[in-house]
Image 1: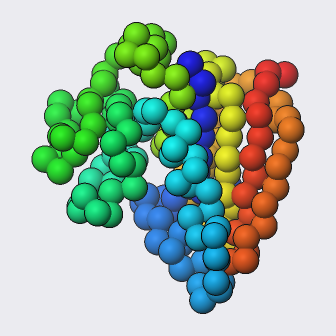
Image 2: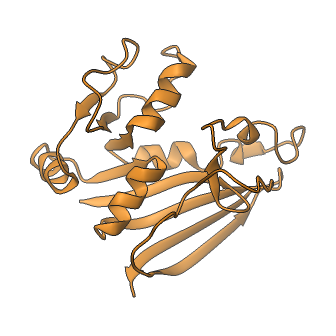
Image 3: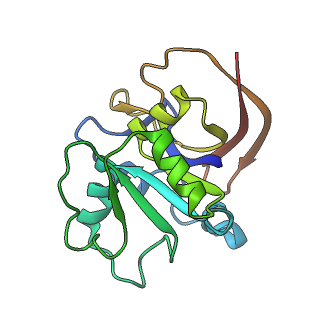
Length: 187
């Protein structure tokens, strides 16, 4: 099964402030520029390429707190798995949208394959780090937001091994966001 990442970071590599706040995603860069056909910076095309989403508890809780309506829901009908060892049930507004999973990642991937799923979107800092540690990520899209936070929750904290990135593709958007796409390999 192919596993890919699509995530935004500050220019200094943080995915959130220390308290989990991501307000800087909405108020950085050029706010009044016409993005034209690139308004979503490739997110919809990426979502069209995946058939499931695996996210961690913290990411799910942030999304649940937004209390999105069906019209605002960015994931369409994509099958969503929420990884958590401590959560007993999903919040009421996520129950119909996601499935809570507490097993290990290889078992989840085997389950996804048994369902005929072929391409997983991996989201959430700790979840991405866990998939990277297992060598399961094959493609990564990182959109750097033009802001330096100085501190926060890093995307790549505690990697135990070097991971080579290959075949880079860089896109600079009119709002000053920079998107880096890589294929992954092992050192």
